[in-house]
Length: 507
Ligand SMILES: Cc1cc2nc3c(=O)[nH]c(=O)nc-3n(C[C@H](O)[C@H](O)[C@H](O)COP(=O)(O)O)c2cc1C
Ligand SMILES: Nc1ncnc2c1ncn2[C@@H]1O[C@H](COP(=O)(O)OP(=O)(O)OP(=O)(O)O)[C@@H](O)[C@H]1O
Ligand SMILES: [Mg+2]
Image 1 (cartoon, helix red, strand yellow):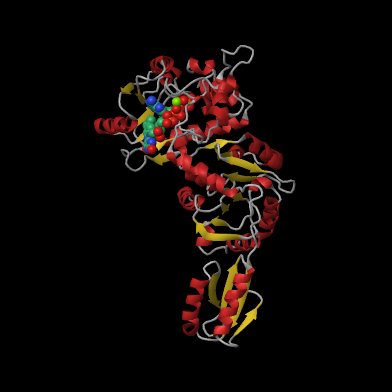
Image 2: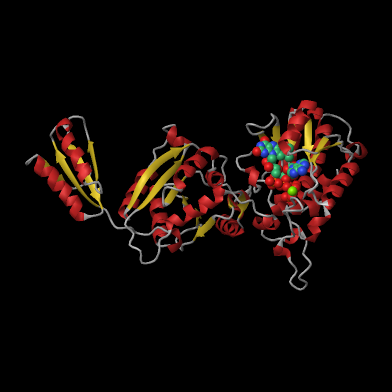
């Protein structure tokens, strides 16, 4: 088949890997669902054009692997139900390309004049439909949390979303279309890089030809795939506005005396929850934060799941000055932390070419898998924190700092780099002073006095702990004002003449 031959003949190894994986997904879908219960969602866009040819290749391979004789003419046509949601605000070029293409490849087309959800409800009522091929890619706003086979969302009619090109980058899409020399919508040659409606889409300004202000270079010339949607009007939401306010929390005005800062710590690790490994990061970060005068409001250990990470970040990001996220970073299936951050801020994951460059310098050719996926970072909210001692910059998304440490020594090193980097926002706040008083009195006896003390010294944290049920009770007093802490300690000691002694640490 011509597509298969073109990709095989290409010297682009990455494209061949992406192609093989995507065609495999297509073949699995054909093996899992009856052909008449599968649909292809086609809109004439570049991603769905790539998908069309992958489906044709997968269909061909599926048929031949089931013993049917391969005959080019038979498989030029792929009799897959094709659905197009047509709206009056679609570009005429998109409409004409869609109609021409389905006719060229003999695809039976159903146009739907409703919104996606109602249209799909109608489609499923009319004909059983178990799976729908969609050209969603990981950088798309709606791709967060999706996999190659993802059931439709709750509240949507039930079907399987099949996303064969989920892991393709903007560059992969163009390598494929150009390598296979297939037709694509003419708008892409006029500087459009992602196409929505006539009301929200213009050519991408980054492709503007400076020698001739009015013309644009073709979409495949866009070197930074992160900016694919620069020609699409941004959907504004109140959520984004709230987030940008939260992002200010971490920095401080110059000259301001910083009394108080708070942080939360999120550790990602199924292994910790299973009791296989012990979390040392939470404790270490609490100590480090206290040492720079920060209060920790919350430490959580969550599962290696995008939603668990996202929910936890959502909880903390607007109430704390900084959120530290540890674990779940890398190329493995369980490395979902960045997807969780993206979801919490309502943005997409997009290829970050600067980070990709750092990765390739660090890993070189020793990693020949999908290295690019490690360079997908939450779009528009990511800052890379550089330090000469760091092998890779650390990632900061608004007020969430993602630590890459795998043990406490690495954490020490990363922490010191953060303290040494202005952009981390990790400013030193007024230090805590503490006093620890130990007694062998029973807790029932001291309880009423401690309760009163808490009311009188509300700016001092007064807590208690014991090492054993029958051992001494330690009262910990922690605050920012030395006199107040001393005052509270003296008052407690004098209430129980000679029955309290000072100890050095809170042990
Ligand atoms: C065939 C098909 C299935 C979809 N299924 C879902 C779904 O299960 N859940 C969902 O939230 N959106 C679903 N959508 C909507 C898309 O996530 C997204 O909103 C749509 O592709 C518009 O993208 P845009 O906002 O980038 O133009 C579906 C869209 C299509 C075409
Ligand atoms: N109007 C539509 N009709 C049918 N399918 C659609 C429609 N809009 C989106 N889709 C499906 O959703 C996928 C993702 O849409 P998206 O707009 O991100 O990609 P595209 O249109 O293929 O390319 P581009 O990003 O350049 O616009 C499409 O590939 C297609 O499978
Ligand atoms: Mg589109």
